Image 1 (cartoon, helix red, strand yellow):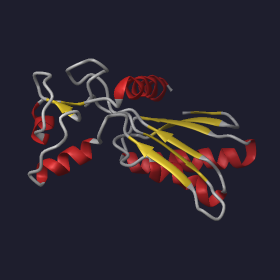
Image 2 (cartoon, rainbow, N blue to C red):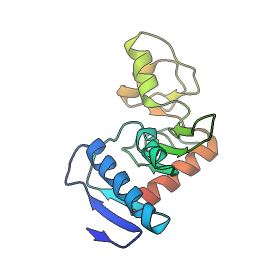
Image 3 (cartoon, rainbow, N blue to C red):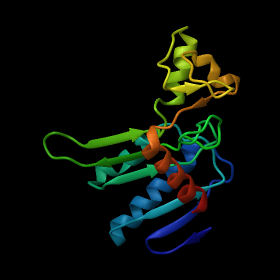
Length: 172
């Protein structure tokens, strides 16, 4: 949609998120190779899965990779009781020497939604600080997530990061 030597805005054309995110990261890495930094924002796409996959694309080129995305509301705000913000995952990958790369990939909720859904599938309980039910009460029932519940933020710092990721990802 728009491009400069170090930046671009990519329209995903409603493609699968993995396709759009891969294309955006490759474009960012190509720009970084010539400009020292590359920043590509993507829009009009969908769920991208684990952000680390995209951040790690820079490692073979000896580059640092950053990836984040905003998502549909699935998390309550700090001190809140209802779905109002996505858990907006963020990932960073940095090359390393003999000990290998350092990679961080995290959702900004206490636990990722996928872990909660897996616990529900396996008939397991979850810690009570992971989720609130539809009435905003802490619960150990992972099934509450699909019944109007909300993931809890990773404290006020996790909520703050989720809010900023939402502002930057949606805004850019």
